[in-house]
Length: 119
Image (tube, rainbow, N blue to C red; front, side, top):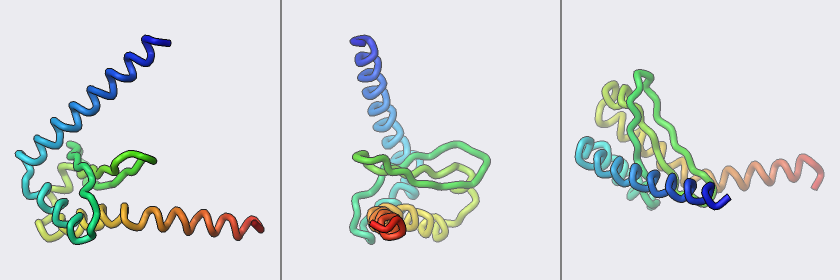
């Protein structure tokens, strides 16, 4: 059991290191994309989510928020190559807005479930 917790802790530290390294690489390698994300978060008055770039031939971007964790955004390299700066700006704003409206959506779904089930 003790070995399990040690490995879990090690994985957590490795994850934090990879996250910091990724953040530094994005800031230095893709400063424009990083700046777009900061601008989008500022406009929406939210904390900017962590930004990750995934090498993939399929153009895609998505956002994830795990309970209690800081949300993060993943943008595929093919999407970055495909879109103009203006289009990437729309994507980053959309991804940031997801975190603004997610709690409201969760509340609405819970409310509708409660009403629908006669509660």
